[in-house]
Every structure is written in structure tokens, then in C-alpha cells.
Length: 505
Image (tube, rainbow, N blue to C red):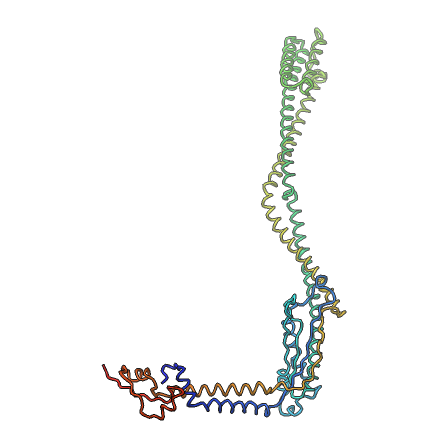
């Protein structure tokens, strides 16, 4: 008795003893059907050829190929083109294929039948090969006529080889053309970046990062010049003050002399004043200093004039006094004028130096900002230049690859084995159909036996009684039929009937 779909070994033995003829009949019957199918079905023959991929005559390290080395992708592209309608229809017309079906079926259906008859698969790499790329591929054509299968296989192989050459040459030419256009565009962008960089450098000339140290050096030099100029202005103003003082004294003495009232004490005081100024300058400067030398000359000139001054001189009119002004006073006036011009020139120079310092400091302060902008322009320029150089290199490689394709020195297909002439049909195969029939018969028989076991609700064991009646078994009474005991001598349990007496509680 089978419960919950579980079949024990005893159940299997019992079912096989009762229905042993079902597996034998089902296996033999379906095996015969499979063998008969091999005699009825139309026979088909398969012609096979092997095509190898030869390595290019020039190493890829010298001339990189323009196409990817992935043979699977390349073969898929060629297969889609070779098995297109535009290629299959001429093959059908050339070999007069499906002559009987042309009047009843459209050309698209015939092309689909021929397309299904052609199969292309990659060869597996050999064990221990240095590369995982397939060494080639196989073209197989299955057709009812073995000789026609061989012809179609040869035609398809020729079409694959021709398509391979056309694709490689076309890709090489298209790649070269595309790269030439890209080179022109990259050259225009590079020129544009170069122009921007030149305009930027021209605009910020003097404030560029490489000129910062020079600007700082110039600022230091100008500061030194400014300090020297300030000192020169101070000296010129001091000289002017001294000269003005001398001029005032000279004019006073001269006017007194003209009026006949020359006061020797005044000249003596002037001489003493100049002597004090001269001594003061010697404390600050050396005897060779220009101010010291100038004041010494004035002091000696005053001494000489005092020594040459006449004891008495008649008075002169104002006009005569102006016309006969002593050379010493005229020289002092010219010296004051010269000092004024020197101070004005030094002041102008001071303003110019300060402006230059301000400009240089402004350039130094602007340098970080300009440096960032320059870096951005330089990055764009370098990127454009690297891209342009890379495109030039790629275009050169593509041009060489195109030339190699024109000379047919690149990697090409080579037929290793000519299309075979099949002698045995590839469909139907007797071992496959016969084995399939026998296996199908065995599976069908097992299914039938399983259904019979599931439909059998008889109780054969103590466990079956307990599960069926849901009562415990107290004792078992054997059957009195001796014939059944004789039959069960070999199997013990086969054909044995037992009666179970069960009491509730």
C-alpha cells in the first residue's frame, strides 16, 4: 500500500513481479518506432570545412590592427552579412536549389531554409595555447544531396573569406578617414587654445608666475633707489637753504656796501656762520663729501671777498646796483635756481619710482589669481596637445594598416580542410533514434508502473493495517492455503496473506 507518494523497496519488487511485461513491451515497442523513423525520415548530409585565422605578416607591435581581435564578434558580423537575403538568393539561383518548391513557396521562405542549413561555429583553443583566442572556425552545410552540400559549403566558405577582406579594408579606410577628420578638429582646437594662452600672457605681461621673483627684485631695487632719491632731495633742499642764507647775507652786505655803510661785523658774522655749518658737516660727512666741498668753497670765497673789500666805496643807484650785482650774488642766485630744478627733478623721479613700485606690488598681489587662471589655460592646452598628438599617431598607424590591407599582408583566413563529401547521413542517425526510442519506452513503462502502484490500495503488511484501520495490531493469523506457502518458499513474502485481528482500545 503506497501512502503520501512514497514507494518502498518491497512495493517496487511486488509491482515488478506482477507487471514485468509492461517495461519489456513498452521499451521494445518505442525502440521499434525509433528505428522505423530512421527509415521513413528524409536523409540529410553535412559537409564541413575548417578555416584558420593566419597571423599578420607584420607584427602588431609595429602596425597595430584597426579591428578588434575578438573573432567571435567579427565572425558574427560576417555571418549576418553572408547569410543576408542579398547573398543567399544568388546562391539559390546559381545551384538551382529547391527547384520544385520555387513555384509554391516565396523566395523568402527558401532563403530561410538555406539559412537554417548553414551553421558556423568557433573552434576551441588548444590546450596549452598562449592565447585564448579561437584559432579559427568551421562552416557546415546540411542538405539532402551530399554533393550539393559540398558545393554550397565551398561557396559559403569563399563568401566568408571575401567578406573578411572587404570588411577589414573598409574598416581600415573608414578609420583613416575618421581619424583625419578628428585630427583637423583637434588641430583647430589646439590653435584656439594656443591663441587664448598667447593673449592671456600678452594681457598679463609682467604679472605671470615666472616673473614674480623678478618683480620682487625690481621692487627691492626701486626701494633702494627711492631711499637714495629721498636722501638726494634732502641734500638739495639743505643746499638750497644754505645758499638762500648766503644769498640773503650777500645781498645785505652788498646793499650796505653800495650805500657806504658796509658793516664788517656782518661779514664776520656770515663767515662765522659758514664756519659753524662747515664744522657741523665735517662731523656728519667726510672731507670729500660734495656738501662739505661746496660749503668749503663758499667759505673760502667769503674770506677772499672780505680780504679784497675796499675801505670805502661811493653809493650807487638801484639800477646801477642791479646792473653791477657782484658775480658772487649772481652765482648764488643761479645755484638756488639749479637747486630748485634739482629738487623738482628729484621729486618727479620720486613720483615715478613710487608709481613703479605700486605697479610691481600690484602685479605681485595679482600673481596668485593669474597663476590659477594660467594653470587652467595650460591644462586645457596640454590636454588639447596630447589629444592632437595621440590622434596623429593613431592616424599614422591606421594609414599603415590600410596599406597592409591593400597589399594583403595582414591577418587573413586560410582554408585548412576543403569542404568534405559526406558518405553517411547526419540525420537521422540510427543509434540516436534507436537509443531514444528505447529510453522513451523505459521511461513510459516506469510512469505506468508508478501509476499502478499509486492505484493499489490493498494492505500487505502490519504497517499497512495500522495505517489503514488506525488501530494497533494484537496478533496475526497465517493463511491455511498450503499452495501459497509453496509458492512463497523462494521469496517468503510473495503471495502471503495475513489476517490481522485488531481490538480497539
